[in-house]
Length: 212
Picture 1 (spheres, rainbow, N blue to C red):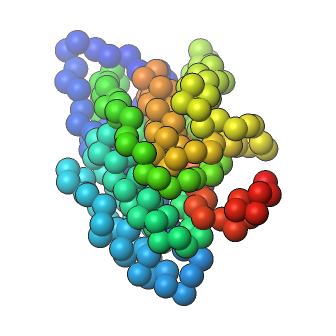
Picture 2: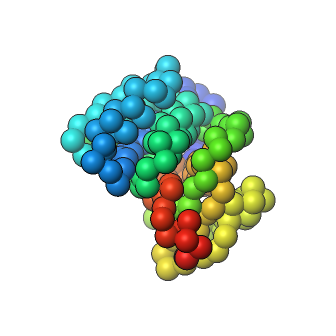
């Protein structure tokens, strides 16, 4: 189950669910109205085509990559539009080693559903982003994929610097999350199992004061 994708013509492509495409995210509004903000965000976002499971820690989202990105953007943007300082933690994973069970045959490849650029949300976001290609083959060049993803974020205009263990992204929420998803999928075209994590801050009083 490890190593780069090696499509085989006689091996049927798995579905997104079987391949383990999904996300976990949580919202942390800094207000005593946190229940209203969180539930409002979850209820407002369009979950068409997705399977959602929410518990007391996070929400699990399964489906195609483009639908996952759209849902996350809508949900987090709703929280941002309340004006409340909110932090969102998002984990994206593709490749069934991240699932409870894995029955995908070696050589079966699932082509990423690359999302189109989403409309601007009007919500300014700051984020710390990390990308993890989970490939332990001797031929793997982890940093090449990571650098390509960072270069893509630069092209999108949201890259603002490298910090300890993370890449800093700033811009409209749709562009920030779009860069995260695009980098995840760029690596996913060659690496069978890849995850990415981003911490997003909205309406931070520190950012409003001009501090970094």
